[in-house]
Length: 95
Image (cartoon, rainbow, N blue to C red; front, side):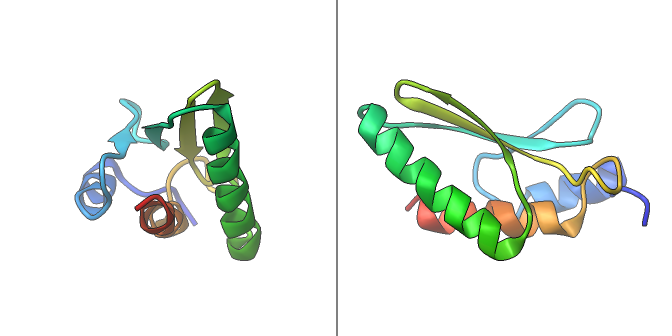
């Protein structure tokens, strides 16, 4: 399966909250801020459990009170519907 086209990715992007599409259209990312390191790690663990359940694993970039999540589908070399499904589920657990 080929990766999602840029116009299609832009359509899907409108359906998720505050995710950013990379200029090359191959990944989406979102940065979340927390009150402290413990809160950041608690959320990271929720994302990890969600990702395991979906068998779709994001790249997580963790700093003290900030988490950046990057989603792409390596098997297709870009974005797939699975990336946006997981992004939507991350949005739900972050509320």
